[in-house]
Length: 444
Image 1 (cartoon, helix red, strand yellow):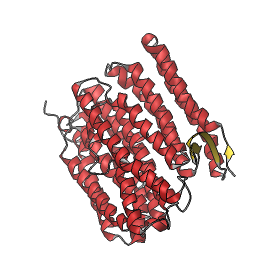
Image 2: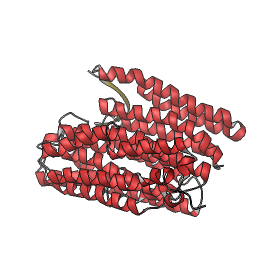
Image 3: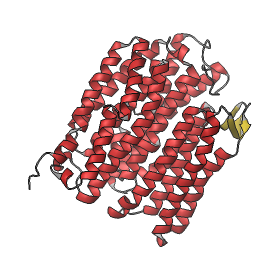
Image 4: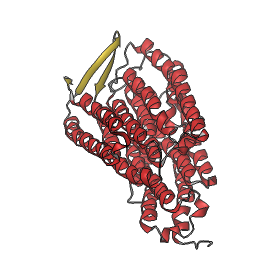
């Protein structure tokens, strides 16, 4: 029996209180403003730890916020996958807040108060995504996350930033309103509920062809997963400051997308139903194409952040693949890849930001010999790159291992080949950066 638990809304409210305090403090005391961000992030993470312990002990925690429509509440609930996502967001908020102090000051960014305020708001909404107890609640927080991160994407206030913001809102809102909302309404019509239920709620409610259409609507409707062809918003958003890139790629936005897809696969369709749908086969080919094409495009990019953006598109395909495989190993591998990619990619973006602030370089072709001047930065980058490549014993090896097992369980050998080719492409677009930095001689 689920308990009405107040800790979840309290944890979500704390970042909003921090955002208000940051706005009040403003530029009058930058040290105090930034201390509020770091301290609140630490408190949130500490409060998440006992919740995680209770979830792992099997407690069912929930909190009903409102019921705007009969039988469709806005409700918070916790299960292991959501708890993992919340812990990632909470911990990386601490790390990003500390990093942002040096970056924002070192790069002399304007509107720093607005940055810290909206970052805190985005974390609160991200926790709402993690805590969502049903599909309607997930949809609400998913949409609010898009709106709350828009000021961060357009932070610079330049024409390029505003264009990026239009692409960001245009793709994410269009896909969610056109596809995701339609899939949600259709699911409610067929199942009479939007609750996340182990084994799914759509089994036997309609023909396989109808459920396949709904499946495609869901997976293309979650634009934050950056599945091709709805991926352009992610490279476009790289005009934002590096801490915002970390939020988009590691802490919140894209992770909210692939997290939503796993929840939909497991709790709305159920893996037993999902594996029988013909639409699943279409998605498998789309995901494989997205993984490989994004990797090939990444190899052509000389701008470091652009290369990392296309790397993220490819890596998100791994998580989406784990969900679509509809096997136990695939779900485990996809969930593990969320964690691995979050820590590895935030390391890569932090390294890119450090290079920008210290050396004022953004292009990979400019990095020759720089690793000898910034050895710790390039060493950190190398560790993150090796994790994404999947070299033992780094984190990517374990998630890719389970994804490979998932392809074998599903009998999809072409997807196993996709994973192997993609890992080779990972080497081709990630390792030239440290090789240039440590081995090549600078031109002058």
